[in-house]
Structures are given as structure tokens and as C-alpha cells.
Image (cartoon, rainbow, N blue to C red; front, top):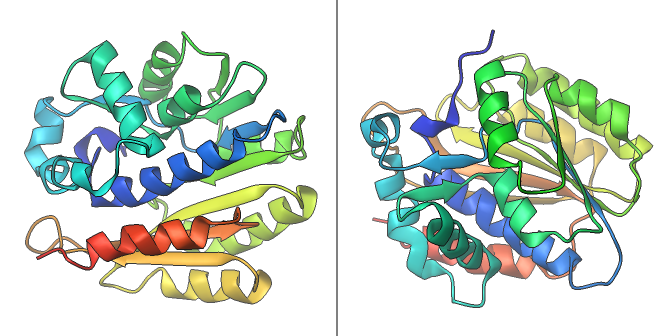
Length: 259
């Protein structure tokens, strides 16, 4: 059974990058009065307590959302969701991507979330119980193939693996190419870490060759602690929404000023 649990990293700078742009995309999509489908292959537990000992152990949230909260204006959907979640769950609560999506989507939209880890799935199911979301205790990629093309066809899929299985770097380009063929109108978003080992680079080369019109956006930041191998965060977005590139540049300017 996979051992990765995101509580150790919740609210870190990679989350700020990923969740800030995800919230912007969902806010953009819901501006149009047409229903959509949101899918996520690695849901995690959806709601995190940054005061938890596991979160404090790494200190990543202190370097992440605690530091970056001011990068987003009051009108931005990311801090709007953060404030709403903290109003409901306390000042140390942090929403994962499933809860960000649930807070921004509408009753007419469909939400499908996959999580294979039994304890994480149970927490996900509990956190999402107030919302009309389907939580699948199943491999996320298998779930994605079972659902595409979804109904409604308009929508977004977030693929956010832990990369605990190192073969993910090799298999994801083929997987995403198949998903994009099956769901050619879908926005498919892959998150990946920027690593000192450069393990991500062959995967990105294969993705760029197969999807030359996709948006690739990366930010860099100092390692969370001495010897930590992740030094940045990346998103590869197929069928990027209009305006996403500009929002990504705006966010990147804040990362560029990190000491």
C-alpha cells in the first residue's frame, strides 16, 4: 500500500502554485453558465490541519501559504476559498484541491475524486460529505479511463500523483496522451515536482513532443530543508483556458522574489 500522506506537505509552496492556478481556472470555467465535470486522480484527504504535528514537523506551510497569502488579492478565488474553509474549520485549516473545487463549483457540476489509500479515502469521503461529490476508492488512472469522456463533456481533470512510484515519470506521458485522445475538449492538468535529480525532465520532453500547444509553467523556490530534493513546482496544462498564461506569469513574479 502506498505510504504517501500529503499532511506533511500541505500548504507548501508547490500547493500555492498548484492551488492558486487551479482555483483561477475553476473560477474562469464557472463564469460561463454551462455545467462541467471536475475529476481528480489523487484526491488525498481534502482538508488539512496545519497545526497538526505532522504538518509542523516539516514546516513547509510556514514557508508556503503562511508566507504567500498576500500574493493574492481579495478578489482571487484561492484566498476566498481559504478564508471560507477557515471560517468553517478553524484558523489552521487548509483546503486540498478537492475542497477548493467543491467550494468553487456549482450544484449542476459533477465532481469525481479518486483516492487509493484507505485512510486517506475515508478522510476524503468525510470532508466531501457536504458536497455532491463521488469519492472513488480506486486507482486514480483507472478511474480516469473509466470516466472519460465524462458527462458533461466540458471540464477539467487534475492529475497530481505523489511520484512515490518512480515509474510514473515513464508511464504518465502515454497515459495522458490516451486520456487527451478520449477527451479532446477536456482541460487536463498534470502537476509535477522540479527535482535536483532532474528525474522529471524526460517526462516533460515526451509530453511537450506529444502536446506542443499545451502550457508548461514552472516556478522555483528554495528547498524546504537542507538536502530536500524538490526545488520547484510545475504544471503541464492541455487545452489551457484563455488568460491562464497571464495569471501564471503574475504568480511567477512572486516566486521570483523569494529569498
